[in-house]
Amino acid sequence: MPRLTPLDWRKIVRIFEQLGYRRAGQTGSHIKLEKPGVARPLIVPRYDEVGLDIIHNLIRTAGITREAFLSLLERS
Image (cartoon, rainbow, N blue to C red; front, side, top):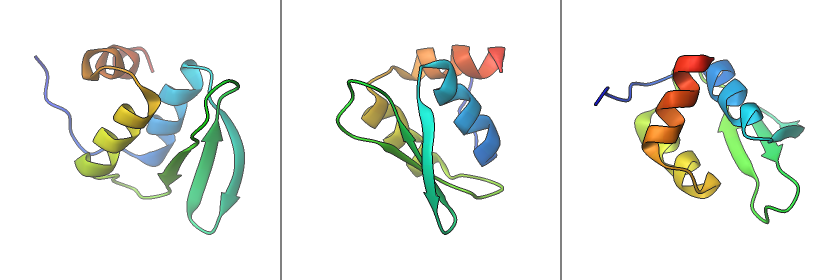
């Protein structure tokens, strides 16, 4: 199984946009992603390298598996 590594914020946003999330605004250096029917938005920091702890939290909040995230990463 491939390892998850820190990623650029643009790549993370593209992955979640494939899942139906849309940019709903920005406050400072953080982008808010929302999806219709989902109660909790995703907050992605605009870091050159977003750390693994933040990526794991985004995956859990979105309700997807690590494998699903990695397959979307390969496509983006």
